[in-house]
Image (cartoon, rainbow, N blue to C red; front, top):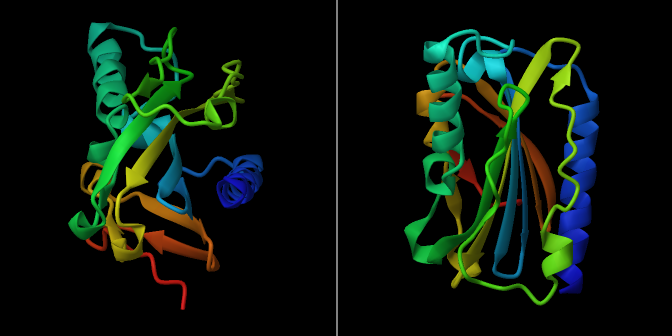
Length: 193
């Protein structure tokens, strides 16, 4: 548990450092922290890159775009596909945006963590509209039965987000690394050597 707490702290500090930076169209942030068999993921994307606008939806078509984006991003397997040999399963997923009046509830997939309060984000009072720049923000937790076999992770989301670059921060028990991904390159190596 201590290693997971350290990885979570590092992931949070990396995510906060990125969140404090400028909102850049065409660029999202993907933070991953791996400790033991737990993979924690945070994703932040400019709304303009996801739905094509950053203002409150003005008509039914725009409302449908936001609803569809929340549904797509709310499913962890639409965002990441860990190497099958690692036998990873999504145990928690949530997404929210400043474009929506409501945020999706965090979905827990039945695995109760002994450190539930540390894993659950109880502060849902987020400001997602920074000076007219709205974001989509998502969090996922995966449990991997064979974390030693997690050699790579595919990011199929990049095929949906045409032309978007993801700035990646990866933290594991072996260290940390920064990377970037942009389609057609959608595979992230988990090797820190």
